Every structure is written in structure tokens, then in C-alpha cells.
Image 1 (cartoon, rainbow, N blue to C red):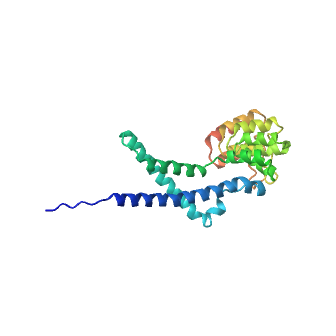
Image 2 (image 1 turned 120 degrees about the vertical axis):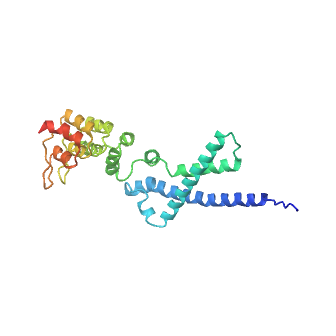
Image 3 (image 1 turned 90 degrees about the horizontal axis):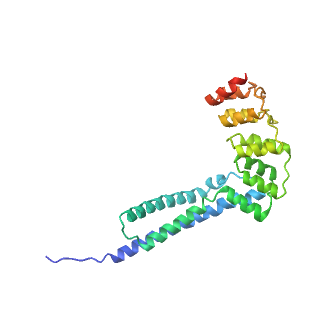
Amino acid sequence: MREEHYDISGINFNFSIMRINTLSVLWICALVVAIRMNYEATFLTWEQGPQMIGFSFVHSYGALLILASLILIIITFIQMVRIIIKLFKKSKIERQYFICFIISIFFICLNFIPYSVAQTFMIHSQGLPKDTLRFFTNAAHDGDLGIMKLMIKKRYQPDSTVFSTCLFNACFSGHRDVIEYSLEHGANINYQTDDFKTTPLMIAAEKDESETIEFLLAHGANPRLRDEFEEERTALDWAVYYKNKKSISILSKYK
């Protein structure tokens, strides 16, 4: 019986070309998404104020591009697993395969540039944004004290009312450094919002930020103040409403 031999080198070559072509499409999609997201986080934010990054983009044609980027992430993860296995087995890693992996990592990283890095770059290169008040108080909400200090260094001059808003915003997630910084710059620890007279202590109770509650009380926060919702709740009432046991334990001492 005659043995038949087949040359599969051409098939392997074509498969490699197809793989690279597919990755190239995914790389382009990831690049477009990165450009769009970083544009929203920088120049668009500077012109129109803080944005819901990616919201309008994902509700349009951008959804397909984001899907392609997710596929790239999955493929890259699989590539990484294969590389780790090959390293563990001390097997040879194809040069082309490894280069494709590195390029994929690069394009993925472009989509995950930290928001604070983008903001810092813009402040240094473009100066203060148009909506400085909103930008400054949003930085407090995000716990980004570095951005706040940089804006002040660039001659933004917030008053005690602005710092009171920052104090309020920082209590949502218990950003202690921003809370202390705001108090040092004249924030009113018993600040009440214009609409419903909510206080920083009430927000901390709602979010069950027990350490923040103890800090605010130690620095003179009044636990007996009431908001102007229908129930006229105190900070303890907020903690009870959300069943936050730690906050209830602390605030119940101040009935």
C-alpha cells in the first residue's frame, strides 16, 4: 500500500495569517474605543464638564466596538494561559505568538488608563476645566485628593461652602483624607444640602461608613439634626432604614 504524504506547512501559514488578520481587526476596534473613552475623559470633560464615560458611545455603534474589545480581552487571556503553560513545561514559545500577545496587551491597556491620570494630564497641559466647581466636588466624591490639591495649585480658590460640599461628597465612600482636608479648609461639619437638608453624617449612616461616623461625631457632628424629607429623619433613622447594624450601634448612643 502506498503511503501518502501531505504538506501542511501552507495550511499552517494560512492559519497564522488568518489569526493575525483577525487580531488586527480586534486591535483596531480596541484602539477606536480607547480613543473615544479617553477623549470623553479629557477634552470633552474639559469643555462640557464631567461625563458619564462611555454612556452615549455604548448606546450607539460603539457597542459593537466594545464587544470586539471584550473578545480581544478573552483571546488575550487565553493566550496568557497558554504562555504560562508553555513556560511551566519549558516549551518553546513561538515568536509571532508572543509578539501578538504583547500587542494585544498594549491595546487593552489603552482602554484602562486611570481616570485620575487623564485628569492630571489635562490639568497640566490645558489648565483648569470650565466647570471647576463640579469637577472639584466630583474629585472629592471619588476620593481623588491629588486632583483637588493640583487644582488649588493651579490657582482654583474654593471657599468654605465648596469644601462643605466636598466633605458631604467624600462621606459617600468614607474618603478620610478628603474629609480631613475639607475640614482643614473650613468645611462645615454640620453642612446641610439646600434641597433636603441632608448632612454628611446622614450620608455616612446611609452608606454604613462606621469609621466615618465615629470621626464626624468626634469632630462635632450633630446627630440630632433632621432632614426635610417627609419622615424628617436623623442620622440614626437613616441607619435604621437601611438596616446598617454598625451605624445603628454607634448612633444609638446619641438618642
